[in-house]
Structure formats: C-alpha cells, structure tokens
Image (tube, rainbow, N blue to C red):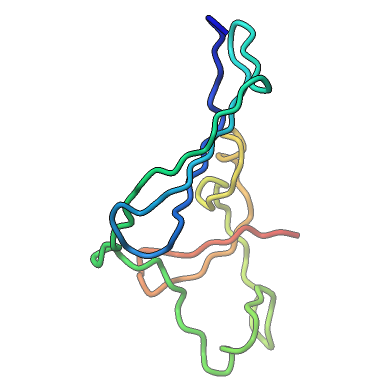
Length: 134
C-alpha cells in the first residue's frame, strides 16, 4: 500500500445499446497489472463502472471503401479464384510490403516484401491487394 503502484493493462468499454444517441450508458471494465514498489495486481480489485458516451451519426461525405470491378454475369456466383481459368493466363503475383497489406507484423517484418495479388477497383487510383498464401 503506501507507495505501491499498479498499471492499467487494458480497459474495455461497450455501449449497452446500439444506435445513434447522446448520453448512452457504457459499461467500462479495467484490467490491472503489477506495478512498482510491490504493487501486485492480484491484491486489488478495480470495479467496473457505467459511464455515458455518445454515438454520432456517420459522416455522409465519408468516401465509400474501394470496390473491385464488377465481375461478368457468368462469374458472379462463382467463388473468386486466382488460378488460371479456361484459356486465361494465371495472375502473376506482385510484391507488396506486409505494411501495405495491413498485416499484423512486427515493425521489421512489416517492411519485408510478400507475394500479393491485386485487382483494379472502380477508382482507377486504388487497387485491392491480398497476400498469397501457399
């Protein structure tokens, strides 16, 4: 006690109800970690609490996420495959960084090149890329 300290490892907050609104109840729980001067998390309990928060309406001007080019009608119900199809050449993997693909990697690994396959989208300046897993 006295000079013991604890760490706050994690806090978790969940709105009790969905939907836009102001002053909505939010359940908040905390996870403590050991601290300095003998502060052991197991010796303490930090009770959860109910706070209030706001859920705001989305921005109507926010751009839509990129969408791939539409597939021909005869392929719409087929799963997407990156292999060769009747008479077509298979796609050649490109090289992307793990960071560009949004992969959860360490900072060193994030800069490494990995094989990826990309497709064009309705926005000519944006392509969707996926990591190739073998």
